Image 1 (tube, helix red, strand yellow):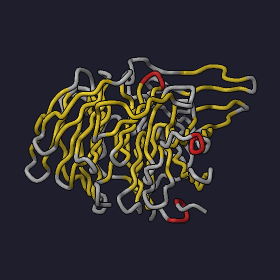
Image 2: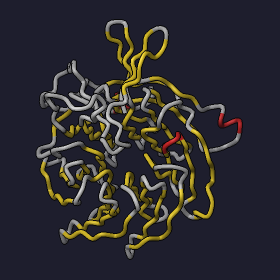
Image 3: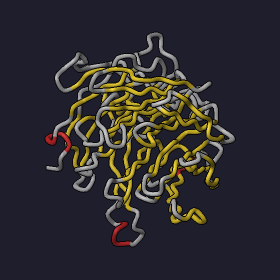
Image 4: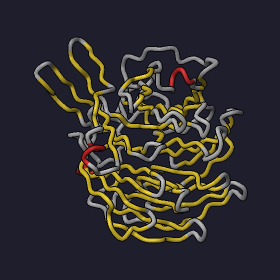
Length: 362
């Protein structure tokens, strides 16, 4: 979407870049890049990265070795991050907006072609499972219920039975689905219009909770706490909200929001979208990635920032911790918040070894 510029008197302007729905891959060029981007013992770049905007990076469910990525170059790629090797690649006929592992040998993906595809790594074959009426923005797997969930700009969520695979139901949402996250047997959906819905995947006959984002601007990402108590929501206006699922007034008092991914230049505050959130499943801490090119690690329960990594060359589009949380995958990919650039930054995926010192509450 874009960055806002704020002075002491408030927001001067909000630059929302191209407006072709969310489909324009809202990415931002960071002009003043700082930090050592060379190979280091703690971090390296994957070879053979996607050649256009990276839309998702996701580690395997029980592995720190295999990473799945989707991209605007129409590809879904499987990497062996230990060997730094591209193991497999398949394509859709149009840009791919999300992907997920089902198990160690199957993945699902969807995107602008409106089609959900399942791919078998063992046989190197893909199968079209079904379609939406508009691009598929989100693809998630819920192991607790053994169901694939897709969210689309057609304002619906669909469930898919991976055993067949076939459709297991279509459920209307109030607007286009921008983000969603599985929380045990529950699903948290973020739509256009700042709406948030909580569904029970075991009983989709009704919506458990209807909420409105506590942030004033468009929702960009939602991810649920590993302890299943709540979720973290980010917006295009450099803010993150920590929310709790328990609707009781006592628990709701704990919710809060904070500013982040903001830079001051020449006395003016530049405000960037927070595009990505990823949880450390052991410590319940989380990483955020913004269009300022920074990754921050947060202790949400104690309201502290634990650390900030060096600045990456361009927007952080997606983040994923490995299953054992020893590694963080960081997609650095220009998101067109400032429209076309004369010199386009490369799309890259960084693999960073993270320590308890960076991720554990202090």
